[in-house]
Length: 395
Image (cartoon, rainbow, N blue to C red):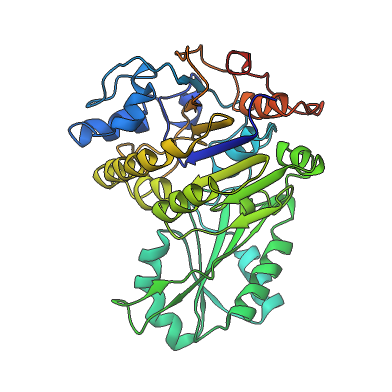
């Protein structure tokens, strides 16, 4: 094998321009990276610049440079969707042909809420698409008075349940989520994730979500690249919400994170460990804090902060390592609405052993990454997987 350790960092939602079918999703003309940089008057990201980012798209503040130790390209999404699960599952080899249910515009059906209430013995309030921090500010005090649990959704296929830890104990909130997960396995409600969102605080000014979040996701149901690696005795170390996205399937080590910075610190720590296999990292704040909230200035600052930490990570990538930086969809903070955007994603591949790095042709599916990982470890690609290996980096 060429690489013993492969580090894949997903800059959640950092898209690189609208896909040809973006008109089907209302996303014509979107470009998360470009539009963010334009609104910020250019970005100072010297480390991404040194890896060849400007070969993928003109980005204000970023120059074209030679990058012999990195190969760069973009990837198109084949799956029917533009959300977290379809993007990550395709990165690990799977095509999602039928999109998961979303209830962004309407809230959840009355029948779903009534069944949840009947089966849990609790009443619910909210039932809208909302920012998690904003909805607990708006409804948290009423929740404390009435004990009604706050239910809300987003642009993702998700049902989120927020409750104050002193009002609804964690064990009970988790039980309610388990009931919701069972209900939302029905075809008419089929959701990708149920999320427990506990919070603390005395009033709207001090409410704060805690680290006791818990996700109840659908399992992929078939073998992903994580499974293939795991069955071969290789490490599948997942940082951030990767474990939740795959419902633990194929994961043999996992760590939660509280921020992009925390995710990068844990990734840097991972480089000091001896292992053979994959470290798979999700940095969610680009998406959750800035994309959905249509905050291009915050988004740009987050990219610059990532670049600073990338500068600390790069010297720790050894000759037998491969560092991959990519994304799972777009979320153009200058676009209308609050939804993800249907975009291609960057694929930046760095290793000290490269000497002829360059820009490559665009790949037709995210799954080319998973195929490359399996090819590197000399493992058979399952028949149901998409993707072809990127041979230029494996020769």
